[in-house]
Every structure is written in structure tokens, then in C-alpha cells.
Amino acid sequence: MADTEVLIAGGGIIGLSAALELAGHGLRVAVLERGKAMQEASWAAAGMLAATDPENPPALQALAELSIRRYPAFLQRVEQLSGLRVPLRTAKTLQYTHQGEQLWLEEHSFDPRDLCAALPAAVRAAGVELIEETEVLRVTVDGGGVVAETARGSFSAAKFISCCGAWLPPLGTLPVFPVKGQMATVRLPDGVVLDHVIRTPELYLVPRGDGRVVIGATVEHGGFDKSVERSAIERMLASATRLWPAMAAAEIVETWAGLRPASEDGLPILGECVGEFANRCWAAAGHFRNGILLAPATAHLIGQLLRGEKPDVDIAAFRCDRFAVANVH
Ligand SMILES: Cc1cc2nc3c(=O)[nH]c(=O)nc-3n(C[C@H](O)[C@H](O)[C@H](O)COP(=O)(O)OP(=O)(O)OC[C@H]3O[C@@H](n4cnc5c(N)ncnc54)[C@H](O)[C@@H]3O)c2cc1C
Image (cartoon, rainbow, N blue to C red; front, side, top):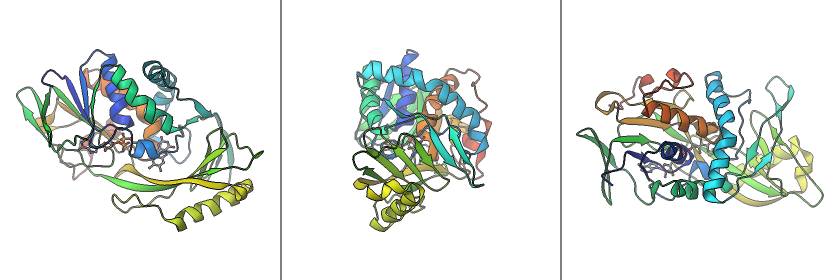
């Protein structure tokens, strides 16, 4: 491991996309994941690439547009490297706004479960060392690089990126926290078809193109609890039926909950750490409701930052040290 150039903590979509990007630029990259890769928020997501959702914070717009431009090449590379398909499932969204408008949006969605299979295989095929069941407990500076301590020994590298989702980064404190979302997949009766996403500010229906529709999601502040409550699912189904009455005859086939990585101001945390970690540690976390959408742009910008290039998008709003309580040294 001593010759690893970049060490990444966190094997969700943000960490693995960054790993793929950096490996594509010829860097030797290792990812340390505390559990199994792509099994947390990135597994739980609905998979909407909601770049034009009027509910998005305006500060996300440029990042979202960059990501949408990079998505086709990102998915193509993942598919080529892994040999697995990540097909787009929808191409349009009917958006209801707070003002009572109905907008048709040119947006795509895919099933994150497809990416959960393909992305880890793709990063491995790209030469990234993906080490699972290995939690980074602490990061310290050492000579010109960093040392990441785990229960399975220490790993050293020239550079470190913290992509730990809703979990606190192992190199100080950042105001990230989990926001739970409960979800359900239903199967529509034969002959009933939904071919576009339907979204309101409170609810969305995301068809998978095979008779299944994902319904989401609750927004709950309650720590790292991923339990599913029958009553919450029933309330969502009732709302879904009011929105799209054909849902009344649908059968629930799966329920689950995931933890969105949130930050205090609702924006991602993306940039170089300060103090002793400057020029050797970066953070990419807190992508909240849009981490699937924002992954290719985040990976691209991380690559630019590590190479010392000017990022294609102004990332001042996402800086690690913008929070009063931030303590990423
Ligand atoms: C219900 C729900 C629906 C969503 N729908 C959408 C959607 O439609 N579109 C969209 O764009 N986004 C959506 N999101 C948001 C999106 O899923 C997240 O923003 C995104 O997955 C975050 O990716 P991540 O890699 O930062 O986090 P994660 O996928 O949570 O990955 C973080 C990883 O870091 C690991 N880790 C943590 N601490 C350590 C450590 N110390 N050492 C090593 N590893 C560590 C964790 O085990 C985890 O695997 C949704 C989220 C939820 C929960």
C-alpha cells in the first residue's frame, strides 16, 4: 500500500466515481470501505437525475448541469469496464410545483441497483484497489503524505479523500448528518403502465420500465436508524394514489430506508481541507438528495483539485471551511 497515490475513504457513488476518475488519469488509487461498497445511500436512492427540479438549491445548478453533461460518458465507461448494463429507465418527468404548475422536464432516471453491481466492478477493472470491511478510524499527516488507521492496519498515501457520506469524516469534524428516507417499490397490475417520473415537492413515483414503480420518500431527522415503519409506507402509498389513481391496485414488493448525507446548509462539501491537511486531504460529502445526480461532476472536480487545476465550476459555496464549527484541520 505504500505506493498508493490516493487513498479514498468511502465506497459509495461519490468515492467510487472519484476513484474511477483518478484511475483514468493514471493515478494509483485505493478505496477503503467500512462495509460493502455501494450499500448505503447510493443503494437506497431512487435514481432520478433531477437537475431541473425547481426544489434544488440555486447554488447547485452549475454543478448539476456539469454532471448531466458528463453522465453519458460516465455510464458508458462504467458499462465498458464492468461488462454490466446501467440502462436509463425514464426520459421525462412530470413535475408539480408549490405554485400548482405542472412542468414536463427532460430528465432521466436509472435504477441505482444496476450501478451498485456495475460501479465496484468497473473501478476494480480500472485498477483501483477496493478494500471492503475496512473502516478508516483516523487520518494523520506523515512526511509528505497521510496515514489512515484501520482495525486491519495502517495505509499510507500521498493524498486522501474523505467520501464517507452521512458519516463523520475520519480527519476532523464536518457538519454532516443523516436524513432518513423510507421508500417502497410496488408492482403495477398487468396492462397498467407509467412511463415517466411524477414528482411533487413531497413525493415521487419513479417507474423502472418493467412494471415496478419506486415511491419515495420520507424526510426524517433521527440519526443512523434505517428501520421501515409500515405506517409511513402506507401514508406514502395513499399520497401516491391521490397523485396517480392507478396506484390503488399496485402491490408492494419491497420497502427500505436509506440515509441521505446532509450538511447544515443543504449543499455538498467539496474541496481541500485546511491547516495541516492542506494539499493532502480533500472532502466530498453531504450531497443530500442529489448525490446520484452530482457524482460525475464531483469526481471530475476532485480530479481537477488534486491536479491543482482551476475547477470547471466555482466551488466556493461548497468549501470545507465554510461552516463556523468546521474543524477539518
Ligand atoms: C431514499 C433516498 C432516495 C434518494 N434518491 C436520490 C435520487 O433520486 N437522485 C439522487 O441524485 N440522489 C438521491 N439520493 C441521494 C443519494 O443517494 C446520495 O446523495 C448519494 O448516494 C451519496 O453518496 P455517497 O457516496 O456520499 O454516500 P454513501 O452511498 O452513503 O456512501 C458512503 C460510504 O462511506 C462509507 N464510510 C463511512 N464512513 C467510513 C469510514 N470511516 N471508513 C470507510 N468507509 C466509510 C459508508 O459505509 C458508505 O458505504 C437519495 C437518497 C436516499 C436515502
